[in-house]
Length: 103
Image (cartoon, rainbow, N blue to C red; front, side, top):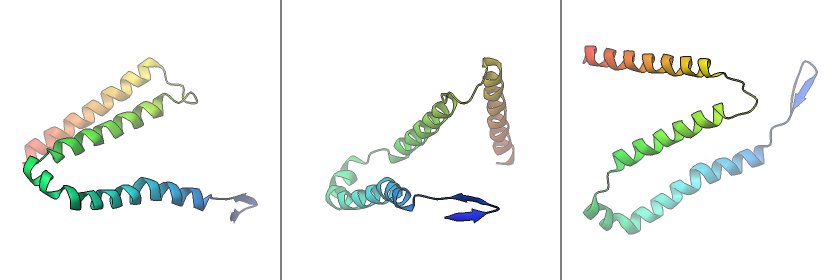
């Protein structure tokens, strides 16, 4: 329990720890165990892990974006959404240009 200036709050450590354990630790352990049994198959097939990880990262970003803007508490008109999309596109384009210029 945290107390500051007359206010208090409690953090459910057990639920946070169990969610973190199930999200991070369990998949890590399962991956290491399955790697031992699938090593030969993986060396023969050579799956494109770079492409797969990029697609998974893109899906995470997309679902986070969709979840953020589908929240009914956020009221965002179409013009603002279009403006945000344009700004993000311009920032990405400028970073790509900077990368091209400096490389």
